[in-house]
Length: 364
Image (tube, rainbow, N blue to C red; front, side, top):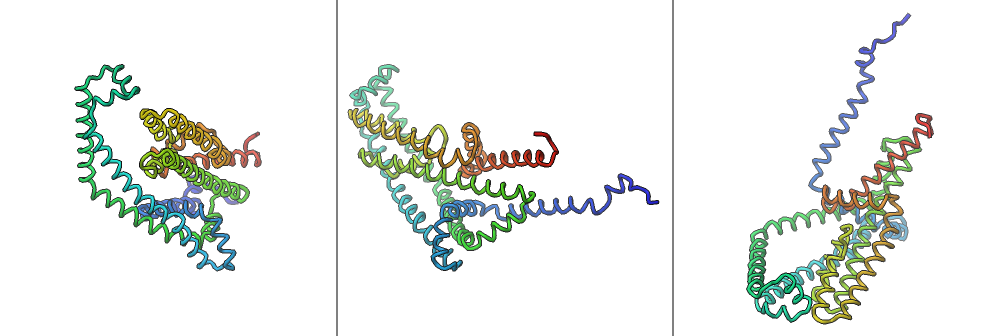
């Protein structure tokens, strides 16, 4: 009669240890792989975003070319360059010109303006009277502003080499991202199938998790990018219509600030409205404010929920915290990583509960 295995003998059985050793090796080499490609994670991130945005046009091109994979991938990459890269270069060139113009205009204004002329404006005069600001205080403030602007200019000149270094690093990553994008277009289906086949979940959970990940990533990427583009475009058009200076500069700034919850484009159009009003154009200021605020409300409360909130199935407060927390931890990438991570975690938690209920592990 065979004696039962002792607990320590069962524990030391190599058949019980091998799965744990395998998991440790996989995790160890996964960490090494991440560290190896860490310098190019930004390229992969940009490529993934472009791939999601142009996936449907790529499928259309692929079908029209009779399923010629390489040619379709090349044309899709060229389409991405034409639609995104060329306009982006144009915007950056104009942005640099407008920043240079804005700085020179501000410097010229601060050097030649008479502080006493501030009192001619009703709003500024009211502020001066409320805080009991004297002419000497105004002159001192003017000198301090000019001094600060000069120090800021010196600071930028000293750090110019770091700026160019970052620009070169960004351009290298961008070029690499285009090559990676081509590979995504060409082998995206195979990559997706490999990930799906190796996903560590039972088959009945696997499809739900993968589909959820795809829908969440689509919603987060398209939601953030499309709404930011729309917000920036509206502000830029309003600045151009109302004949305000450097509309492209403020359009880009508005698009960036629109990504930050609560803050939004308010930090751009409210000072602009005050500027218009301070020059005696009350009707124009009210009209400008009304149009900017209406566009902000429509895009934030209609378009953005349509693209993000409903698909994510995440409470607006949790979505806000996930975006803010993602930005704090990962920088600009956190706009996508934060909501994606939280939504997938909650989805997995819900699926585990359903799995346990279906198999009688817990009661509903």
